[in-house]
Amino acid sequence: MKQYQLVCSVCGTPIYEEPPCRCPKCHAPAEPLIDVLEDPERSRSVIEGGCNKVVWDYADLLPVEGAVPVTLGEGNTPLLKADRLGEEYGFGSLWLKNETLNPTSTYKDRFAAVALTIEKDRGARAVALGSAGNAANAVAAFATKAGLKCFVFLPPGAVAERGFQIRSYGAQLLRCEYTTADCNAMAEECEKIYGWKSLGTIMIGNPLACEGYKTMGYEIGKQLGFRAPDWIVVPTGGGALFSKVFKAFEDMKKLGMIDKLPHMVSAQAEGCSPFVDAWERDLDEAEDWPTIPDTCAFAIADVIPFDSRKVIDIYRKTGGRAVSATDPEIITAMQELARREAVIAEPSSACAFAVAKKLRAKGVIGPDESVVCVLTGSGLRDLRLFAEYQTDPVPYFARPDFDLIRPTIDAYLAK
Ligand SMILES: *Cc1c(COP(=O)(O)O)cnc(C)c1O
Ligand SMILES: [Zn+2]
Image (cartoon, rainbow, N blue to C red):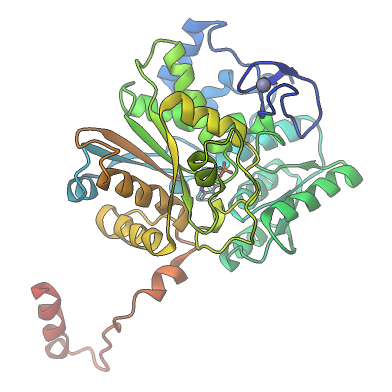
């Protein structure tokens, strides 16, 4: 496979360090040097031609040249126009990028496809990672497809269903205290001791594989006919997804395919919101969250905001910001997405819509503006959380006699 030069994602300085790959000058995370302007015609045709198949439509803009793709049909997810919720809350237009439809039910498959393609090409035997659950499922699935062993460290906050899914793919699950960051540190020990690549989904750890997330931004561009939305709201944990969605729009802007950059907004849970803290205090880098996170949006409750230097640079460049939602606001948003738009999104994803609503209510998002909320992962593994609020009893009939059933149906119709 081709070797890629790493450069600083903010100032462009070449980076030669092993992970953690940070800029010696400004501390921002690394990215591979893939310049869309090197062959603008080619780049344009790749981005225009996307959305037919999968992530691999964009192989020319990913750091995988010369490798055989490991794929499960990831990407190419729908961009749904949310007319019911859009009208209800007074949005000019509201769009939902439905990433729940990926093979393992989250957008992390875009990372895992690239990561396992690289690891298989390198002849790796196994991979390891610490995760809140979604990255682990994506990596476990693609490792299985590639024929590699996979070791997963999960912290106590990860819901049991994530673990069941991981074990279903045949990966070795290990439960470990305390946080996702601690679990990541254990995977890094595996890398030192056994030489297995630690596949944490952060730019400073895996700058090449994180490029897979760009494909989501290219897809949104194409799905909107290359008219950039006014706002994009992205659930943010460590910041890799946020940074790469932006990078896709930056690429399309450089190529003259769109005429402006969207305002980029990070959505976080109030119970773990280091980016909101950093934005409000106008810091260049976010500080670690001081406590073990307390929120149902566990997938974005990263106590160490690894790639924050880049994320904060993007707020400044796009007039963006970080905004948090409380757990009750997140759960309401989750229920509304299911009941009005028929998308079962997990709490971390519903957080994006909860935040969009708040910004619209305050008038930060104007009445004629377009907004894309990225629904990063499926709530089908969180049905117990939905069930907690389904307190009205399910009608039960001891006999299949329609005269007994009819009054119940009429009462429901009258509601
Ligand atoms: C991983 C994840 C995110 C964002 O993570 P980053 O670390 O910011 O890239 C958002 N939503 C869900 C559901 C996730 O699993
Ligand atoms: Zn730099």
